[in-house]
Image (tube, rainbow, N blue to C red; front, side, top):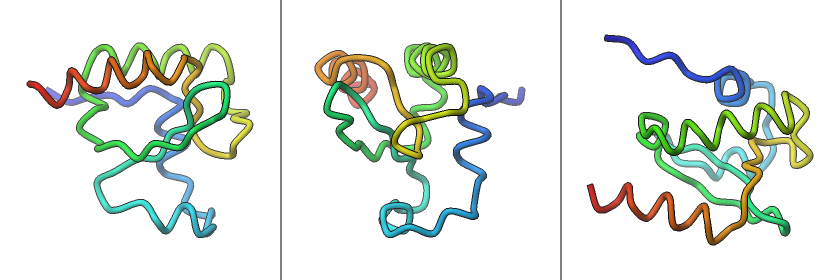
Length: 93
C-alpha cells in the first residue's frame, strides 16, 4: 500500500532549487517546519509524515497558507506547545 503525501509536502520537499544554509543543515531523512507565533524552526523525521495527527497539521497548513509559506519553508499553523505535545507522542510509539 502506497502513501500519498499531501500537496503541501510534495511541493516543499521536492523543490531542490533552494540552496540556503538552512536547507543544507537538514540531515537526510528529516524535514524542517516552522511552528508558532515566533515561527520556531523544528527539524523532524520524515517518519512523522505517516502519523495521522501530523497529516492533520499538514492539511491545516495547506488550508491556511496554500503554497505561500511566509518563512519560505513549510509553516505549521498551531501553537508551539501543541506541536510539541503532538510530536512527543510519536516518540513513545
